[in-house]
View 1 (tube, rainbow, N blue to C red):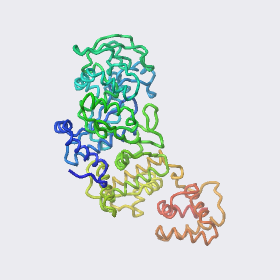
View 2 (tube, rainbow, N blue to C red):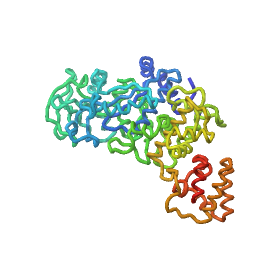
View 3 (tube, one colour):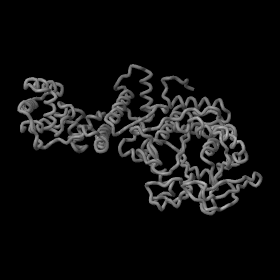
View 4 (cartoon, rainbow, N blue to C red):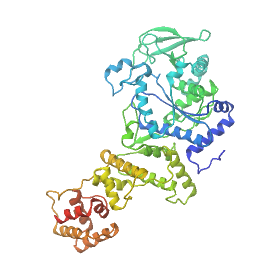
Length: 551
């Protein structure tokens, strides 16, 4: 087994720790022999699931991948908590859905035809994207686990030891805990959010309960009182108890979550105590029987935490309309789970820097760019391996810098014409095809999406067909542009052309900033733009000469 070092990628370090735990802990040793190393996650499908959840899914996916790369049976299992109650009106849906408040998501009709139920609809919006982003996962339904009887042993243990559960809650929260830790589904109205378990008959294994009218503010119970078996899907645990019960039921050895769950006295604190003291199961990494550990930082967009309930940010599935899957994955793979991740696609730099860093990582992986620090070189190569989707090619695909793609696509106006410009300028081979052509077209398409959706105004431009109406230039600026029109007939390189601009401005007695301003006003009707020499070559010498001659 590899020894943990600072040079190891964080996913490999976690995989290393999981193997050590399984070797030290007999219960886990037996589990991994029978089921493999289960990396677990879960999500309540109450509405559009935001990109913030994607951080946890990709973290868990690459930990499972790191386990497999180490020769172990790493499995990522994601469960839809579809037996949770609908506890807040969904802003996307008509008020007719309010009648389902208090019912399990799995028992509510889907808002759209073709899905099994409400929970399935929202959950599958994300699951359908997993292959595209390279997530290898086994999908599970928490409701199915209850109905299949998988939870039955934990249900009996928890209810038989409800006094221990009560003591844990009171110890951690320092206030009375006066309920049985189970919520039956009302046999009359089908609600689970309004029921209260009153007593547990240990011999008959039956729960007495009441569906209370005013138990919660967001749903009204029907008042029914009944006696029911808690087994086989007739109800569920409260969340913090359920989290603990899932771990031995599923055989989880690793489950991270957002840092809000790991605060002192938070849900993880309660769950690990129940797991240890009642269920005698070692809580999954990063927790131990006595230590909570650390959760991962939030994925903020523009400084705001993503929130399904508050309707903030991008939906996980929607994000694919604006960022390609490999960039989403790369962003999350290269960032340690405990590091703050604040990404703003509408900002000036975040998208451009992301592409630049990805391209550099790719060049280091293929040996096109040298990284002198061997630890950093190894880390960058591992990041590329873990973030890549599908089989890695034998050689590096053709790279087009993102800023160049942004300029070229706005001049060419289509991917095909942009490729012709790239060929003319010598950025790509004239006979480019296959993987290289696909890579270039993809980058151009991504640049176009960024321009259309996020780019600041000073990155956007439209090349003028004629000198803008009403444009007034001084005689010195006009003369300078006339000289440029004559100059660009010569076959000068971008660097030489740039140097000539400074000479012309000096000769004509104008400030260089005024020279460049005049040029941009004629070309794109703006006062600033891309680097002028390269921009002129991109637009085409003939078109620029024609515009400058007419000022």
